[in-house]
Length: 313
Image (tube, one colour):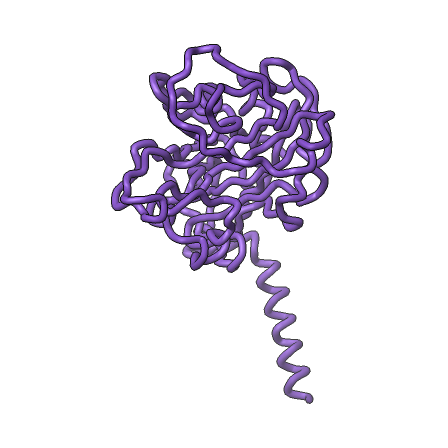
């Protein structure tokens, strides 16, 4: 018992000394880091069950149904602009290799088809130093994008974030329901298998089921939907985000759902296409969505993304 007490006391002393020395870490050591994420809609924090006015081109009132996205290859930038990879914690739940699933819905209210647990920050370590910038990719790396969720490690076993072996994962799953429609607020968005077609600009029809946005790779060539492609898809649709003035100790990465939907009419849908934007090349509803995300789409070239930005704590 005496030995145990002395050992325990020694551990306490060593822990205290280490804590006191954190401000003077020797060269070659690591420092902990957490990249925090949050969401905004109509200038307010996103909360499941809340209503938000002035969304989209028709200034519609909506309620969030889902907001999850994959982030990979996180890097911090030092004073010289050098990118330093963040080695993510392998927690067996939210983070795997260089990939993390950010989950900003709590499974309540209209988000009841989501998860009660949330994951609002990517945690890991970097070499000790001063960092003032952040770079990351929204999406799943190709080598992980087309594996089976039935045997994949967490968080890649999240079937709600998966399309097919051919198409891979949904990099972003962001959904809103139109407020005042109880059926919309109660159920999940359902993706239909609409036939491919070419619609005339402005050819739209009323809809009442809300507006889901599911972003992932398209134009993936393989023998069937249950076969993974051997090469990168025609449209990878991974989003590069660069925040040059980001302090990981003080700042938060914002996903702005309002900016994502700013140029979309969430009350109508292009006829004979999937609801909202499911990344289909035939869907004109995806044009403003892809533009906001900084992705090229059809004949519209890529422009700087506006959905992700820095906010001071």
